Image 1 (cartoon, rainbow, N blue to C red):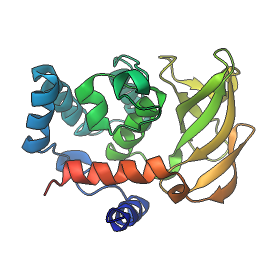
Image 2 (image 1 turned 120 degrees about the vertical axis):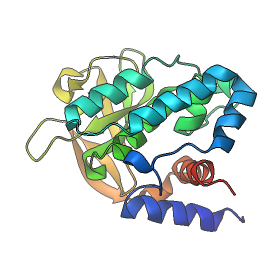
Image 3 (image 1 turned 90 degrees about the vertical axis):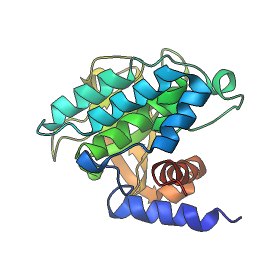
Image 4 (image 1 turned 90 degrees about the horizontal axis):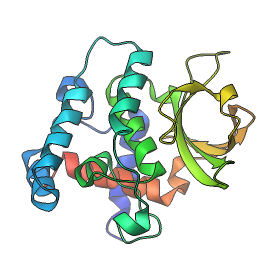
Length: 219
C-alpha cells in the first residue's frame, strides 16, 4: 500500500511531460543501475545500457529517422516469453530491465520504443501503445503506433516485423485498445477511437512508471 502515492506521482509526471531526466543530454543511467545490471547479467548488460544512453542523446534527427533508430535498436533483442524470462505469466519490464536482461516479450519491445522516442523529443500525443490481435498467430500482441499528423496514416512499430509500415498494410493486426500517459482509447478502425478512460486503469503501466523513476533516481 505504501507504493500507491509513488504510482500517482509517476503518472502525473508522465502526463505533464516525461520522467525527470529522461530526455536528450539530461538522460543518464546511474552508475548504481549500471553496476546492478552488470552484476546480474554480465558486462554485456552495461554495454547495452550505455548504447541506449548514447541513442537517447541523439540530436537533430527528424521523427522518421528517430522511429527507424529506435525500432532497429530494440528489434535486435531476442523475444522471450514472460514465464520463461521472469517466471511470471505477465511482467512489464522497464527499458533498463529489458536491455540488461537481453530479452522480453511484445510489451517490453513496445514500451522501450515508446519511452525512447519520447526521450528523443517525439511528442507524446503522437504515440500510443496499442493492443491488437495478431491474426496469423491468433493471439494478443502489443505494438507502438506513431501518428504523423491530422489526416495522415499512422505507422506501426512492431517487434514481429522490422519494417515500419502504414497501418493499412498491417491487415494481419486487429486493433483492440490503445493507451499512453494521457489516456485510454477503444480502438476504432485505424485511429485512436473513443476515449474510454485514463491510463491509471492499467495497473502494470502504473507499476512500470514507478520502477522507472526508481531506476533513474535511486535513493
